[in-house]
Length: 463
Image (cartoon, rainbow, N blue to C red; front, top):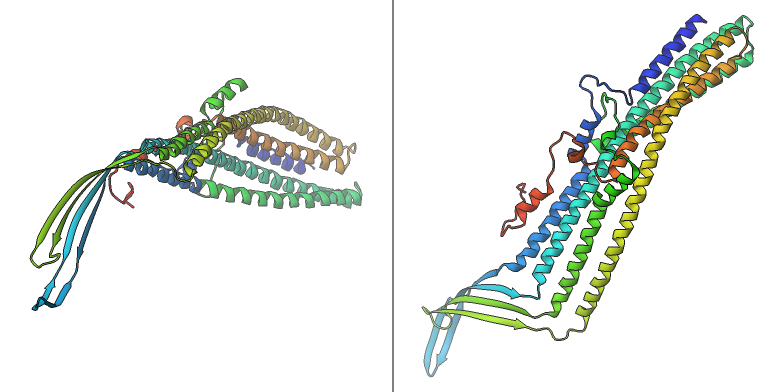
């Protein structure tokens, strides 16, 4: 019986260490930290990299729109063979010439109803909105990485608890069988110990499956297999002081709201683009051309022209007016969408704040429950030694302690994840704001590289 007690106490100490590893300070040698895992996800997550590529494509819409300010130049050339064989006024004519031409045409738009200006502003608004969308994807990926990291930690600790529980129950069953052989307990006690051990082994299998799923999710988000994960810490230093402050920050800084405001700007620019179809257009055309052997051999002609062109739309079936009206309605929808997004952000902040408060309270309550169950289990074991408690009482006390410890693991995991959730919902879960040591991706850098390019088909990275 003394040996059983020692084994049980050793199991309890192991489980205590496993739980404490979730949030207590201290890192093992060469261990992956939560911050480094977030850095890996920031640098290599495919979802985030896809959004970056999408944003780079959006940057090009400004260069496309700015092209409307620039001249359009085209060149042309032709050459052929013309054979003449016959007679004219009694004279025999036989001639072979090579008629050809070369020309250059330049067209410059002088006024197009401010269409180019409006298209440029539309493209710029889309670029700015895309940057906010990219920032929101970054926050989502980082939060998912934090969740995956803490899930692996929590599931690992839970699996260790269940494995240690199996060891304790195996020793409990052995001791119960010994007592049955000497007539101290009945067959019922042995069956109860066997049933509890079978259930514990089933829980180990379930915990192993859950851990494998968490590892697969971690690999998907972070990009590597989890190895020697260091303890995770709450992000409390970046959590606002109170709920009111969190809501104010979120309504002011959340990328979804800012992106929705840029969508309003883009919709208003779309109205002006549609209205430009109602204005006249003015362009200037210049051309030069040189002709060779057009009718007679060894002849050359040169011509040049500069012309101005004015086009005034009078009526084209009414489609332009419908497009203007449609664009105005889209502005109204975009403004309503801003309010919808604001309400969504507010609701998510309140929910995240409540989850964080609940997680803090749960950790305290579960710690108290674990301590009480430890005392209760020790008492039940001592009482069972003198015949005041049955084997089932001991098994129940062990199960209650196991459940309390598993719940404490979940509460500690939620405590860390909820702090990241609050920072995310207020719009600040970015590598730059929380100080994650990783090379920062700058979407503005690519934009500056392409916005004024006059020519070239290679992307800034050489493709």
